[in-house]
Image 1 (cartoon, one colour):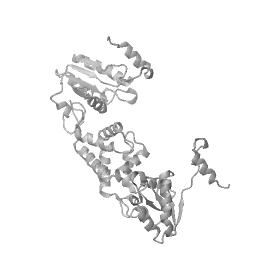
Image 2: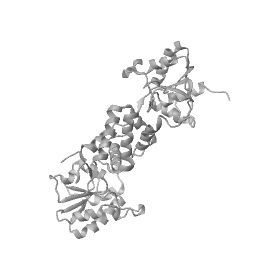
Image 3: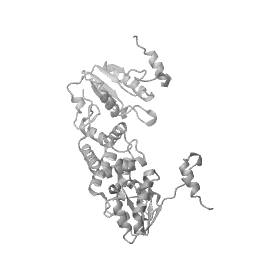
Image 4: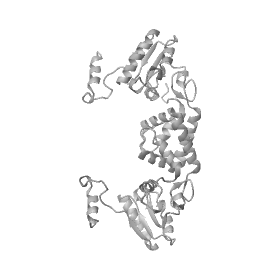
Length: 201
Length: 201
């Protein structure tokens, strides 16, 4: 008796969906089934959108963002302040900042954080590109919007050293109580940062 | 300042992935990003697999299974016992039984369960096809492998009535303690069914 159901085509979709973050084998099967059952409003459009992505989406050679034009539409946007570069670890972080609509400058995607134990040294991240952009004369401030993790912070420390010769002002995100956060649920590190950076009312 | 990031192509993928079961807006974004970043080992193969599915996968006119051949490979498998039909609500149930490798007969997918409150009457399910198959003379037993829910069981009751004139034996799955289940965690209904259908050792 066969254990695989309905031939290799569906199995292949299940397998590929199962490699996406957040989808286990069981939810990948459910997702594949939903795709195939909803042929016209889900399968056909998604197949088309992915084929288009394969054809069109490229990495921006300047900032590392993904877009259908190169340089990307953020780098080319004339309304953006070209004297400010916000450095992020991953494209997902860039998306989060754009959704919040809080950055009117340019971006620079490192492609991760320094992690010697995992073999990620400075050469594996897009650091030389950042130093080059900082030295171009156009840039006045670089905001290190890295994760508030040990790796993120040590990457920030390394970047600060590398950027020092360019004379550009280097800043980092403020740390403190998240908006809507309850003190009772916050860790000691956050509370310590919030007390230390307290503001006068 | 734009709120949508990286143009409509990526947004469209995020939106479509977000319609899959188990993926919310946030995980859809993560999945889309993973797809685009892992172009060669994920995006390209998935785009290809979905395009192939669009082209090839059809619903079996006999049993309702999805396959690239019609009738499906399960219906056409000469090793299967054609006197036995296992009736399931959804294709996912068929897949579960096939993975378990416990059915050597044919299947019949109803496409859901009766649910008068949601407007799902007998005409919305593939019931007439089942009665036709039952009356063909080849079938000796029909197993109602429907969910052990109120809707599943009332659908089973309705099917039993509809199938009565064909003279075919109609059975249902056994109910009781799941294998590996601990009594302490089971609901009263399951315990009652397990006691009632107890077996002599």
